[in-house]
Image (cartoon, rainbow, N blue to C red; front, side, top):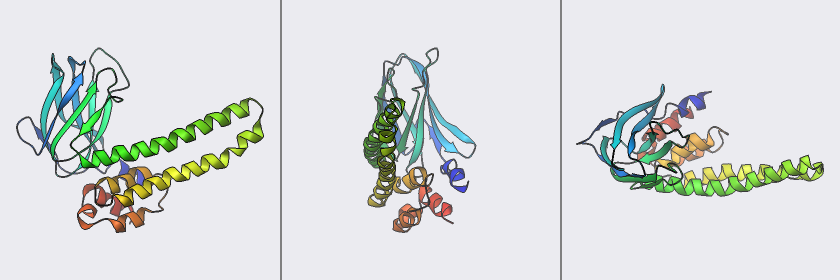
Length: 228
């Protein structure tokens, strides 16, 4: 239970927002959007809290400024107004400096491109490597279901071990990625969100590998607290 409490409480730093000042300048474009509102949110123990809102009225471009204490995950949420869609939310790893988010109204999540954050760049690489393994596993699961429905139960059963091995590879991929990138905030974040929900194994190893500045970061402290 302790693990999952931390998953909803890892964003606890104080953030302020304003259109004129801030150490994170966030700009970009949502192609095709003329009317609607973007909400920039952070995770708190009570749920997602809105930090800033951007109203679109005829223009598809935007620019806003936030004050963040350190690199951390934020959420970019679109209210389309009269248009309904489940494709309305983007998670991104924000960092102080200049960042840019570009996407489209038609494929808000699928077309998203986030620039200006090294942690986001690494997270994209991690997700791509995980996706390759997950897609392979999903194909095997589909084959297993088809074999079972067609009466070839032995063939279906023979895929169990292969599917389990890929699950292990997905887990090890997360651990190896965190250890390889231990000098970035993405390392403890992956440990908390990708590894901890499955097992405590490797959490202590990852924690002890973190340099001091990352161990004292938002997600580094959460990982340390989780391991107590």
